[in-house]
Every structure is written in structure tokens, then in C-alpha cells.
Image (cartoon, rainbow, N blue to C red; front, side, top):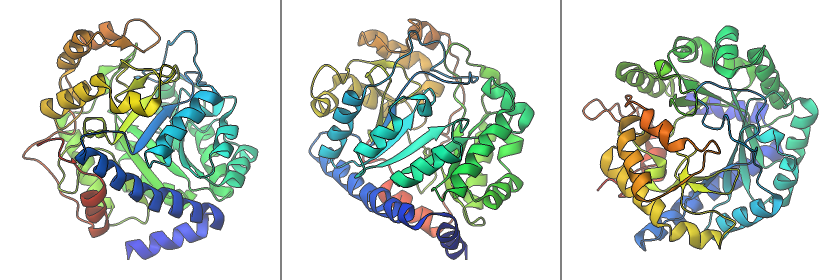
Length: 397
């Protein structure tokens, strides 16, 4: 009965035009992007089916473990850069883009970009502090965007994690504004030791359902940046507990539960190692993923599609990551990653000029690669989707 209940919640909470756009541009468009990605891989060419773009390094919070903190001077991608980048994605069959920061709602031309590319679908990763009713109404008129708002625990933990005041209430005010305007609204959480017992519970999921939230996206905290707070990293058993909870609640709760870590068999995956997604930072550098702040190419230097497809650095990273671990190399083997970026003379793209030093100072932490302890998907719909649209694509042999 979960799928009919979920479908009813979609019909009840999402504006019909926004829902149709989501189904067409994200749903069907995403499938086409995956199939185009598979065809490219068979030819030996890799261009991501889903690009993640950090619009700006500016932020109105200062989170623990944030890799953007301390970037000087602040950087923003221009409209011209973004037009070229999105056009390159379209040329390779991709019409879905994740918009990150910093805080993407601080980018001065955010709404212009969404309006200029109405044939695409965007996921807006935000802390929600600037998403009031007028802002949500603008997003609804555009129709091609789904806000996913970060919630990092109860009120006390949220202020500590986010480096702000009254963050919990202000972020949920953003959630409520987006739901009230009929947007496809999600909530994300970076699971760590200080919020695991709050966020990884049925009570929390029920509270999201009651608020009209349609999907919950769980990440695993990765200690990075100038203030990594490694004491917050999850243990092996806590990550296994996370996986078990996700699998079980997908069979019980009428809310989509998203992760980007495991395939249908419960085997670990790294989207960057597979090549299904990469990241462009606010200065235009093409990075493997957001917290790995090293690159060899910048979108301002040449044709973006050619830069990515022909990148020896990205190809070398994918090979290193896929042969080192099925999980997150940043957590499982930061020393191997440090050796790689040193050997390839990669550019430090952190904006702090200390990226290599930060990487060398990192200690290994458990990631989602847990061979022998895999927990397979139980719900048939998630199992089918993961098997056909989110798996290894041959990257792991």
C-alpha cells in the first residue's frame, strides 16, 4: 500500500503543473540521461548524466565539516558560464542539474538561470533560510525546480552543526513555505554522531510526512574542510544501522527515501567513481565531487563537453576510486587520494590554498563500503530502480 499512499501525497501536495514537469523532465528525462550515459560508456566516453553545480561560495551559515568555508575571495559562476555548462549537459542528453553552494539562493541570478532553461529540471540544495513564501512562489511559477532543504537535528544540534541561531525553526519555515506553494519539497540530512538518534527515526520521518515533505535524502557526514570535526564521523555499525533503517522504512513510509550510496544488492557505490555525476565549483573547476577540491580543468578554458570527456585527471580519479574502494575514497583512503592529486599536479580548488595539507591531515573513517555485510533492497520498486538506473556500469569490474 505504500506506493498508492505516496502517489496520493504527490497529488495532494504538489501543484499539478510542477508535478507534470517533475515527471517529464526529471523522471523521463532522467531515464534518457542514464541510457545516454550507458551508450557513451560503451564507446569509452564518460560525460555525467547528472551534473552538480555550486553556484556560489557565499553562505549565510558556517557548518561543521563544510568544505566551502574559508574560500577567498568569494566566487560566483556567471550567467554566461552557467549557460555554457547547462548547454553542454543538454548536448550530452542531460537535463537534470543539482544546484549547490555555499548557499545557492544567495546567487544574484538564480531565478534567471532557472527561467532561461525551462527545458531542464533543477534540484536546489538550500538551508532554507531565504525560502520564504514570495521566493517559493517564484519557484512555483518557474515549475522546474525541487527545493531540498537541510535539517541537521533538533534545535540545539542544528545551531551547533550549522553555526547559526534558531536555524532549525528558520529552515523548517522554508520547508513550510515551499510545501504551501505546492513545490516538490524534500529534506536532506547529513547523518553524524550528534544527530543520528534524532534524524534516523520513524518519528522524524512521520513529522516530515505530516509537514507535506515528499522525499528525505540521507547523506553520511564526511569530515572535510578547515574544521572537519572527525569526532562526528559515523562508526561502521552506525553506517550499517543507517542502511538497515533506510531499507526497512522504504517498505513502511509513504515518503521517498533517497540515498546515493548503495545499489539494489546493498553494495557500495561512489557516483564519481562510476562517472554518473561530477561537480563544477563556483570558480568553474571540474571536480570529481563537491568535497574533493582538486581539478585539472576549468570550464572557462575550452569546450566543456570536450574538457570532461577528455579529462585525464577525472579518468584517473575514477580508476583510482573504483580500484581502491567501492565506498568513499575520501573516507576510506585519504592518503591514496593525496598521493594521486600530488602525482597529477592537480590544482587545489578549495580557495584556501591548503587543500593538500587538509587532505594529508585526514585520518581514515568507515564509509558505506562494507563487504560481507550488504543489506539488499526489500521494496520491489526501489530494487527495480536501483538495478536498472543506479548501479556500477562496469566501473568495479
